[in-house]
Length: 284
Image (cartoon, rainbow, N blue to C red; front, side, top):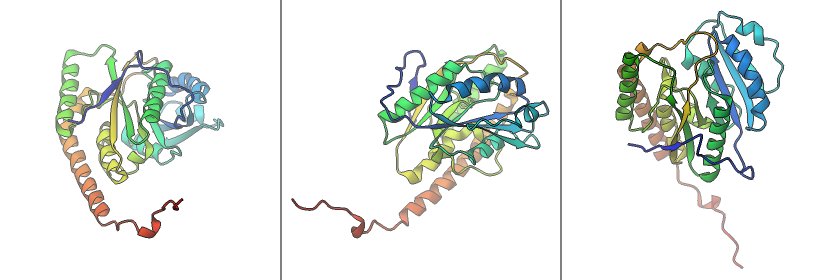
């Protein structure tokens, strides 16, 4: 099983500002989250410069509230909105956002903002530190919700069983596959599976398949944080969606195997580098 280290938002050191920290694009899929967006987007914009956030992409996924009207006139240079005329789902919203990313690293946040701004700050800083310390590796920082608002017992059982199944099938030591909050190198999400619902839960598997052509090692890390209750509205999540996990996992693993096989074939067919392209130092 691929081991993933943990980064604790309390004990992890602050980033030394002398490091060359990577710039980040933020993608926020949202469905009927107008009030949560109105409260949280201004705070993120204020902190954007300090956190090297160069782009904030909000994907309005067919909302029937006032989301479109509230942000149609936004002129902030870092903020852009994508509007889906109908509700296409979180995976489609993430795919739309990825098409507009202009930086080398991308972070995902849920539109319900069940995460504190300070946690976002600490997570970005931990990621930047990990990248600076291991520039030859492709770092993935996956959120892990350790304290969550109260859930019913059967929901926790289904959720834990689903995550255990995913760890067993994928070999990835990720405790919380269902957590959207994560940071990835953008190039690991350039190719996405077509016509597959809920693929956003399996982005680590997709990233691993996309990493093959880069010939760079992956470094999975988990970031523990406390989830807070949503401030406005009701959750769109239904734990029963996890009941379809076995079929979804089968589909995503089939895609990853096929895509990885195609990449291996293309790498084997690549001609070796020409001797004329090798730069040698002149003799002293």
